[in-house]
Image (cartoon, rainbow, N blue to C red; front, side, top):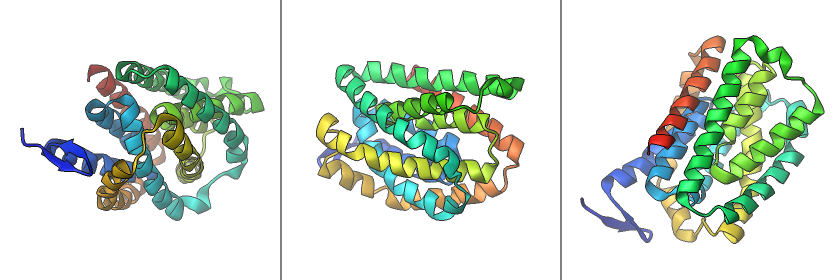
Length: 254
């Protein structure tokens, strides 16, 4: 298989294609096709390993977050964001500590897949008519905020946690997308120093490699906007659950 070097990374054409595919999926995810982001995480982890892939993915997420906020910023519900942000910061710190303790790629993948599966089970449970059992209380926001920060830091998987929380609040489609767009813009940029100075998973070379995916991210963002406009509210919720489950299965079998 042909190998070439790009910014100190030895790549195959398949590996480079994966990076572009991930960029496309991340762009789509940040403008509403959130299940696409769930698929992108295990795709990158399968090639570059659990912890290393999280650092490689983060700059792409930060870039894509900007696209999402530009388009959906008017729809955000700051009532929920104010509850989540402080506790998400706590979760990021805890996730950073856990990542330093659990340093094997197999361990990362198992935890990441487990997080996704548990989230899917909860989302299906809520869809089956138990949404009234989840109270709209501060303690639930605290729990979800910490879980979102932890999973975001540990494997860029907070999308599943946010889906559990915001879908349980029955937010309309555009409000859901706008709220998650602002949440991840803030949290992902907050994570950068931890990746730089604690995990050392972001380097100049990894950032330059991420920049090669910028056109794919932009195309994905435009595609995401077009797709979401055509998905009815009820089908959109089921789409998120289905794509999240596919991501978990993909990660477990890799």
